[in-house]
Length: 168
Image (cartoon, rainbow, N blue to C red; front, side, top):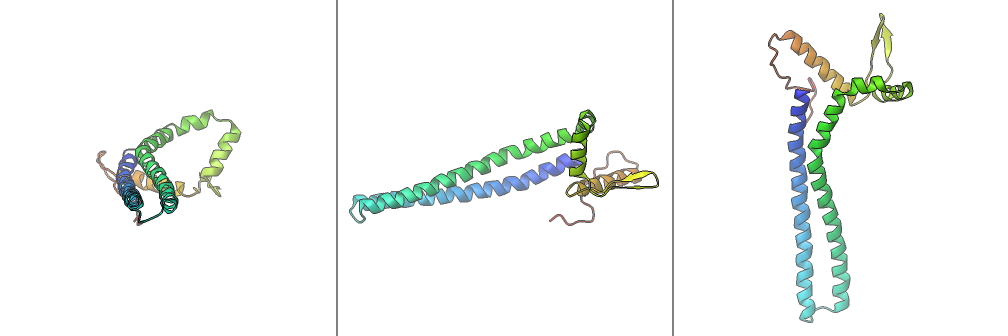
């Protein structure tokens, strides 16, 4: 749980940078459109353009500004809820076993069909085959357990949560 939480925090930083950059770009575009409207209004007052043309173009640019504001709001909302949803998901995974035990058999089957594919029995043992992305999590968990068993120190952190894979 600790290393997944840390990975979530690190990826949140990347996501936050992405959202911040997008917000900055969208705000600049909004300001550019507002400058056009303001300049065109002065041209209308000075008689360089006709009122109908001003009305048409300013209406078009204001619609574009509304779309930009919606996009900015979406990025701000996604930026704020990213960590909260990740933490809630981790809390849910900690309770997954007890929640699974309380479900009706039909719901258990649906969840297993969602997580697993082509499981088999070998030497009296179930061999699970996970669907993506659960296969990566199972692989990382297995590697983490092996590493913990090979190292005597209980405080070693598992830094490479996708061993052998280039996650970039």
